[in-house]
Image (tube, rainbow, N blue to C red; front, top):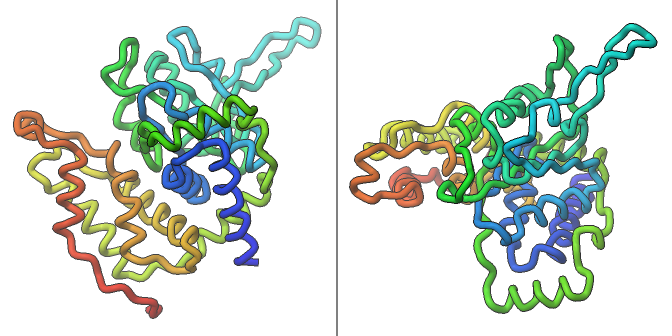
Length: 318
């Protein structure tokens, strides 16, 4: 059963790579967050494939997905739904919003108002939303994949730290290499798109993989390594706001998912190192000293990974 689930996971990644060319590491990181039960924030310039990646994942996993193009006029009721009065029955009837799905794609989330952004807070953390005093549960699985343009883009509004912390990872696609961009041009001219992908698994198959990932073995020394990395962000002289305990949990779950995608049933310190930047990048806030010294978040995280010693690789179980 374990090998079958691993094979299905690899098949999803392979299928998505037919559309998202040259970004195998990005596909793997995004899928790791999905099977770890987290939400994904993709931050990059327009046109590098952020939305294509999200749609391709949805198609390959046969998930019910809704997409909202976030603009200043999008209202919380568009996301959560609303109640409409029915005169004939003298009752209010609830009309679901876009959140009633397995995969919710929030396209350019930082172009809408903070009021609408905050509509996602409860549902991302609690797996439920409330309208007119009635709380409704999301479907299982439920994933939010949000895209946003860099902070310097015109017409954008920064996400608050409380909402950023609810995304398991923040990743960047980056521009493709020359050879890959040629393949992208050729593929789009020959009809290669997310709609052309085959279904590899369905929602039940994804839940089975998630359950398997939750069984990955993590040694106490690996947990200690994760906590030491997190604590280092709270003590760094260039960081004003370090990683929260929610980030600690996210790092351990991502490491479990990453180890599963390596074909193992246990987590190594190397797995933690692979995912730490993606988990930490959007959770730390740099201080004035860092801005004056021109020290970036990437510089600080690289230094932390270099300074915190990894425990020796091992397989024995305590």
